[in-house]
Image (cartoon, rainbow, N blue to C red; front, side):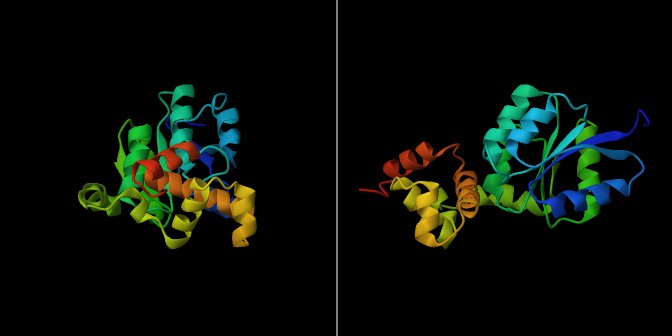
Length: 212
């Protein structure tokens, strides 16, 4: 392996996404995938013992929420550049990820060339923001919307069920969803609202007088 080869670690719970990323990276002459993880525990277990230059990280994997996971990884490897790959093109989510320690943010529907460009930028010590996200980072925070008003109808429904004290399994049973689907919704809710856990959601609801 050339000394100039950028070593990339991929963390994503979807096999097809990991396969796609590997194909894109394999199409270059100066990058190689050196490891993969399928959930947050897997990332934390492997990242400390893997020699890599850039970590590509999915925001919504099983386990810790994306923001909390970024913080934990930075504690473990402070100098490791983290490129967030997310389905969310919401400025507030991108901003929260960057504040938590990520070095770049790219949406999953971006062109492959953007991915290569982002990895190269982070490997070289720079930062990278998806050009399509720049305006959102500037203007998403400029409106008067409260965080819970950015939730989808389903997310808002689950938000109030969490605040009411229902467990993931209870919510899943009531809504006819799988526990995994509910957990994914919960992670997205916490990301959109920039909180780390269910207790913070309850606190938010009380502070905003959303519950009696």
